[in-house]
Length: 196
Image (cartoon, rainbow, N blue to C red; front, side):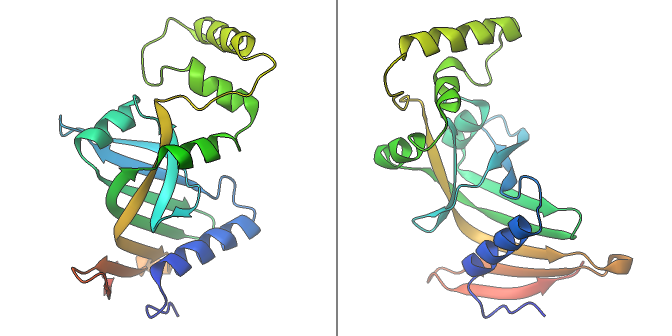
């Protein structure tokens, strides 16, 4: 039985840890949905990198399609899905940029090729082909040869401050269990179940 008296962040961390222990591939992958000023929804996979200041963090290029949509509308939704175990975690809320210091600290933990890639990629922009991008990677590898790769100004993190959590557990006959936490004006959580 799912205990709604437990803080939703604890459930989130527990379920992610269980997925990792089960050997779920990409257990921290979450589908991020955004809607920009054009009102067209867009979804892509990003990687959850832990809780920072009460929000779910992820990183990327601020000039990417997702970065531009977030700048226009900071209401987002993410979904973790584990098909084998019939579990989903959906979180919606407002997303905010992380601080420069937080960005730089995380950037230092990335492998060098990922750091170079952050410089080489004008993410979401049209390119003439793979060779073009490989040349850019080689150029940045050469320019940073023998030195630490700094965090680009247009690259960094976000954290989603949740307004709602939904923990979904699949059951036979489509008699699923959906446990919801909704943040109230005073910061407390209202909990209830949704029909499957």
